[in-house]
Image 1 (cartoon, rainbow, N blue to C red):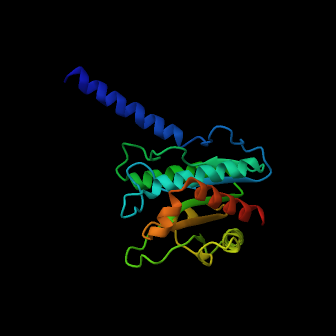
Image 2: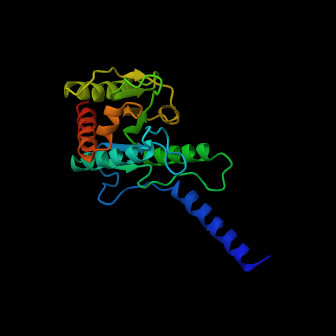
Image 3: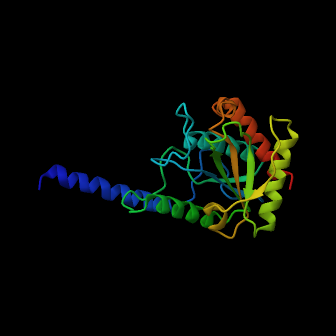
Length: 224
């Protein structure tokens, strides 16, 4: 075998080790607090890497918008003295590149980060899509039906968004999502809008709107 083959194997091996180690450490962007606050939150930007999640007809990827909103939310909470941990801070997946099931590996890595952080709340940022009904739009918060505290946080976030007089009124609801059930910590999932709705897409790609959503979510969390 050529030296190029061995070099290729070495790169893959080192990459696998790096991803494995990353799952064992809490990921914090620059400037974020380090768990010394009285209240600590894990912010999970859904999807990443090859798993772009939903997409708009124009090609806007859910994973990119999720990350942008998650970063703004992290900054907003950090400025208010909340301890912040992020499951991802870039566009890459958290999966081990050698894993057969990339999705499972990615989700396992998120679970490990949450468990290591021992947070007061987990908040996962996502976008929705319903191509069959493109008129449907708006932000909606989901929670695990078995978690009373999760429901309280979800309703607080939803109520604050509804009170802001945005374009639509929705209700917090139960949802069967892995991120809500994979740990014992209070967890909510925020679907920040519909990529199947042109009006939502036009707003979601706007940084100022992303910041506004992050502020509304943060205010909802801190109102509990």
